Image (tube, rainbow, N blue to C red; front, side):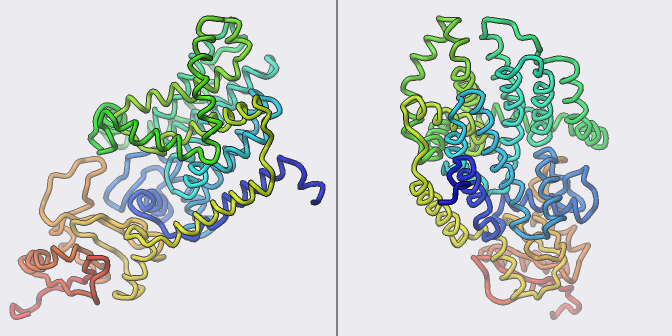
Length: 498
């Protein structure tokens, strides 16, 4: 083996790079989530408006702040409109988290850096999430960057604490631009940790310079869009914060047992193949917590272990109480989980596994990524694009999904700047922000565009044709149905006999 490859750090870096970029662009955009994020980013590129996230020219998309859209749009602008470019921000966020796991472990558990990075890089959940276009990996990277700044401030040379606290607030500002107030949840961790320490720290967390830095980076976008869209502030606070936390309005496992159903499998399966080490840590945790609670000197002497425990437990507790529960919400906790596994293995005298073992596991993970890329699903917008081109030709400027889930991922795969809309068959009262539908049948027919393609469920085809006829239009099917949907054009009825 070449001497350079004997370095554990280099081995981990190579493995992480292979896992990050292996088969990254081999899968089409999956709707609904990947399609929505990619569509909004492409609309920013098409329109030149990077301030207001939009589903199309007429409807805004305000469910998330803009950082994820900006990252995807910038990547597509550089590397072209393809799935690889759209997923690149998630892959880079994964790599940043691998490096941050190394860095933080070096402060909290000296000597376990390579093991912590290797654990994070090869966990089933962290690798799988790096192939998904969501806000969660960028959020995980930003909050972990913030926690890295805090760790450096508290576990490094005190005279350098100010610059590291500034890095903490930089990370939180970027996270706030990624997912709003939930991004500040780790602040609870650092506040509780500082309060539990027996001695006062020379540099405060909430100093003027840090708060000003946060305000300058995180708030201008919010101020601009709230000023330009009256009522948006109430929507942000009411729907996107309060309702997501206190109600099951969005149908995200809000039942009392939902946290068991979602988070227990995520933690047990997501940490494979390192789950046994994590379970051994969990079994010993109650005794450790009692010890830290009673003995102030023990808290100080084991402050690295205490910080890691708080970093996992406090956000996890908040996620369990919230009524909106999804597996990816736990992604920011996997860096401390990886460091905990490395710390546990170091205490047990278990070194980094042999390279052949890691290579075998990486090969299995790559095989799973390839298998998922070829898994047949109606959610793959690339397959939808092929079906539409076969029936309507390449010149399609608009695709309208009538009373059906809009495949917004088609915006990327049609490669023509095609606008995607979800249309209601009957007039409806639409919400001002993030309405369910982008328009109505009557409105779209009034704007009749010859190069538009329509899609509806096969079961509603007769109803759609009848409704079209009452408004002076004829629906003409294009080829055979695709996945239970009719793809069709609409033409005006010139003669009553038509």
